[in-house]
Image (cartoon, rainbow, N blue to C red):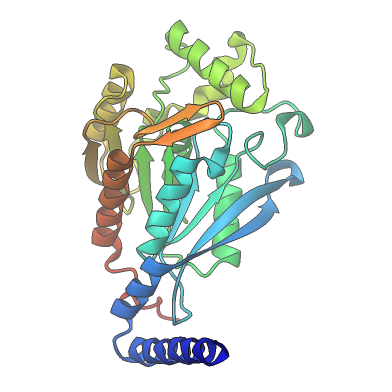
Length: 315
């Protein structure tokens, strides 16, 4: 039996050596193969607003070579588990398998980040300060290219991603997945306002008085950020079974974009793309999630070139 173990160990070492040599010769193809086999996930913390530590996870693609990667920052929606929601984990891991370095983090009050009660009264629901702190961590601490940084988000997170990407020169690309329909202050339907307030309270415990809503949500009225700087590229993603209000809002946003833009529509999919958050029983319908991940991968590949082929920037 020991000889069999030794033989297996030797065969694995030989296989690794073959991949190492092949990586030096064939490079990108072998790296992509390895990325499909393994994604390394590392827990981190970084300084957010008010000097409070925010929780994050880095999804590293497998690689034989050390070099900067195309980076994707992910902003979660109002689901209580934040970045650790099964739907989000699967999406981030799928992109990492394709060769992208993906960084997900918990907004204040969500997941593993400090509760709202430890932060004091929030000045807004936009959370763009959280996202900007995450961008600073990515560009200063992680091996990502600074010329192709993508910010991506879902629902509330999509609005945060868009608002942040529109105003932060470090961001090149924006992916808004079912962006929350935040109209201009004073134009909210009461039913939408109550719905958002209930979601925020469920996730964070924060009870926002309705009279405070316009002040707090105002920065996420996305049309105020138009026109965008010319270098930005935007992907709008929609679920075809989402609410009419969300679909109409995102279609109008797409129509008014002044930069390179694309729209991806996932068929037979709800707002959470097949994910259902039943207490103690999360469920994911694989077809919508698979189509979502593949569609985003294809778009990123088209604007970033092959993530494994791309050389690091000069200098």
